[in-house]
Length: 540
Image (cartoon, rainbow, N blue to C red; front, side):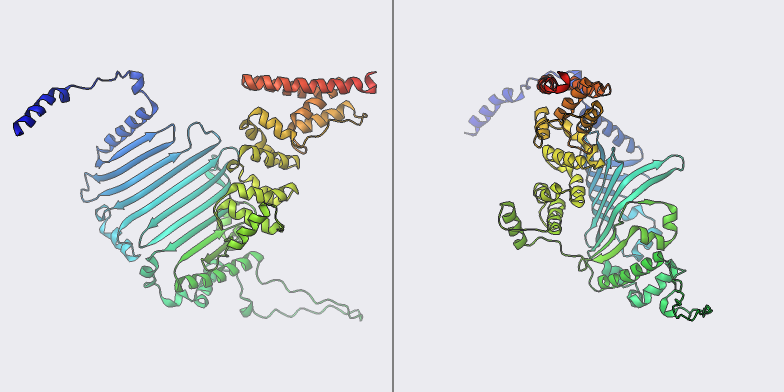
């Protein structure tokens, strides 16, 4: 039986050794962007092997998708064989190459470790003094997003090491650029937050801190002396020198002179921040958890050296606040509130004030306080947008890219019609994302009959056409613009010809199908203009 099995196996050998038919591969098949990028990555790795022992498990580079993955990296310099650097996984993501509206860079690292042999004995001793005995990062992430149109920049940082702490930071610059003449950044800070969550590190370093330094009554005077040297404590201020009395006129209506304030408003704000922060840190020390520093200026602040020179103006401008989890207001939407929101959506007998709608919308829009749902947030904001609520408009305009393009276009169009220039700046971009017929239908939803009083001059008609064409200060509606421009031109206003030409030339930038539809739309409006023009008394 064994012999029969061996014979059968021997008979199968020729079949197993016949090579599979190879598919022909051309040079063009090999010269793909992804393959060339991976070859470039391998060349870089080989170059690094000239100075260190480098191995990895997997590498995948896809430039068109804006993504690179590297796993199982291990590096050990030849000159320092006791130094080993390992990395479990690194993912680098950028904005796709076909995306030209913004730039993005996301570096996500898992399982980074640097061996003791990579540091000198002195460096290891310095780190040990602050409680760090291992150079380990369980998770690290840096994300940058830059909007080319507004020059806005957002930065997010995350660093997490189990057993020590988690650090998270978010910075929002409304404008960020570089001044080449002065070789310095130009940065307008709109908001920033830094959050540290203790995971055991406080227990390590708190033993080295004298307990007295955690008492607000001890640390506040020290910080004031260091940061606010000109601050005068009202309780310890010397008595003001007597002011010579002015001669009395006998009527008894003389006013006492008002004493000058001891401190500037900036220093008073800074003192209040130091005092509140010391109390907050004392609560954190007693019950370690999350400590959060927030900068929320009323308007974006241009960061410069003058602002950083003195603590008082710095605090007054950036409005910092330090608080713990216990200090943070609970913004969660309760089950009862969620039920009321559902009843309101269904048209039930529930009324919400403007403040309630803003709070609910903010929670669903940001995902803080309720599961993120931009569509529901916009539904809650709709009544406020219809009444022109400026706060609701600002909230909606900040999330246009997260909305359905048609809904986003409606919001921007309505806001621009009320004179909002930020919304006006988005109209052309949003129109490009919509099919032509859908865009025209949206413009016509609030349209009315094209009626005239009969006494409009050519200039009046041209201004009406220009307003409808631009959409700033009046609803953008191309049908109205073409109608009024035709009549203005017929009335002898030569400037209206530019509007007519612009609208008719729009078809040159469209696809064939859209251009045909656009020509039919203009023809219908032209017929309407002819009817109105030849029916007017001036044409008789």
